[in-house]
Image 1 (spheres, one colour):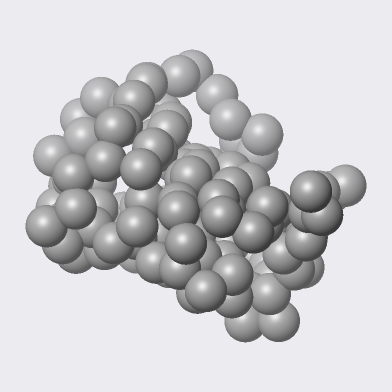
Image 2 (tube, helix red, strand yellow):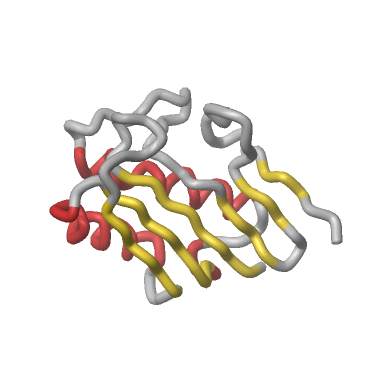
Length: 127
C-alpha cells in the first residue's frame, strides 16, 4: 500500500525531520501539531486561547490537504503542560470537532519538544 507524506503549503515547514502527516489512502495520520504560526514561530503563550487553538488550525489544514476533516477523526491524543488549560482546550476542540466525538486521550506532561509549547495534538482520521 503506497503512503503519501503530507506536507501542506498552508502551514509552516516542519521544524525537524518529519512530515506533517501520512495518508495511506483510507486513513490519515497527523504528526503532533504544535502552536506554530504560518511562518513557523511559536504562538505567544501569553495569548493562551490563540496558543491552544493553533495546533487545531494546523491539524485541520493537514487533514484538509489529505481530503478529510475533524469530522472524520476517529482518534486524538492531546498533550497539555497544565491541567488548568483543559477546560479552554475542550472549548476550542469542540469548535473543530463539532458533533464528532472521537476516542481521545488527554495527558498533562511536564514538558514538550519546545519549552514554549503548552499543547501538542495529533489525530487519526478516515477518508
